[in-house]
Length: 280
Image 1 (cartoon, rainbow, N blue to C red):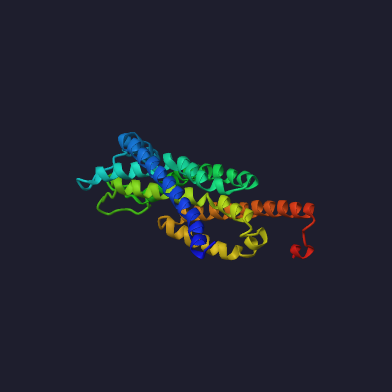
Image 2: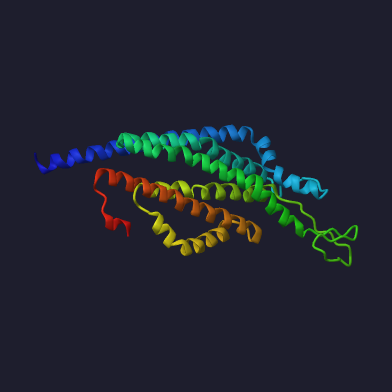
């Protein structure tokens, strides 16, 4: 067989894989666009749902929940942002299915059994993180932010400062700014909750070990602090919550990877190929 024939045969599988990848990406984009269109049509009730944490905080303070548009096009961009977030959430399981259908043919049966639980856990952990952000973090954050209003008409000051001329500085928020901040919370916590899935999968692949993760714990703390400062607004409460949650997920990941290491050791010992120096 000539060298040219060998090159042609080796390039054929690559072309087939690229064609399959293109097909899966096209399907993923289609699912995302369908989800976007559904959410764009129902943008108003979705937006009303997303404003519930803010409205609850304002209601406890005796204020009306009235957001405003500060530019003519803001309403349209609010609908687009709602549809982008909703489309991504609706399409997330379908995109995961397309990813599975792309990688599954190249796996052995045992590898499929090992990878499938992670594919199921990934959207579950994302939704768990998004729910935690929406129902826990967002109300706490807005309660903190709105605590800096100043009510001067009746002589009260929310931040315990008497205003000599009765000046009132109250919240009258932009719908787009509120939505952007809320989406930032939801996406950031949803992605951060992927940490156990990612590290455990890397442990399965032999890329990380529980001992290695434990040894770099102090660097992980610094990295998590930087992450909390970057993805959350500049308020201490939200940053502390994100740090505690992500660091807790990191410690959980160490225990999950330790279990993976233990199972691998048991399998190698059963096969008689475990080396005692591997215990070091």
